[in-house]
Image (cartoon, rainbow, N blue to C red):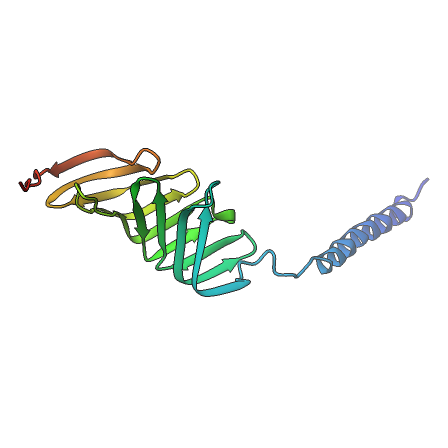
Length: 193
């Protein structure tokens, strides 16, 4: 007759040793993780009163971004700006200025997210008064010359005004399209002769 407990003991001991070896390997691997800060969202650079300019192929300034305070984060290569001003310079058209209380710029400046008291201003021309659009937030793609929001928008030009929800701004075609719930009042400017 076989004695099972004495034959089962080595198998249990080997299973226990294998489990202990597995646990010990995991404990050692935790110590080998890099602690270089790349997994944390800590700033690596802070700039005060800075200006960045992007030029077109002919060497003309395409747009200028300035702010009194910038914090850069290396983990996602983003920058957070306080009180930014983004000015888009357009050939044969007045400059277009965007301001806000806050902004986030993605890696390589491809997208700028503006929020809190966002204002988009087209400078006055000889035949048109200044146009100002105000909204809660705005997503801008400066190189593409395109911006959009899903927030309520209020636009004033002289005494005329229009309101709506959602907007698309195309810098290349100089158009601003409201998406929905549009209301407004147009007052024809007086002509001087």
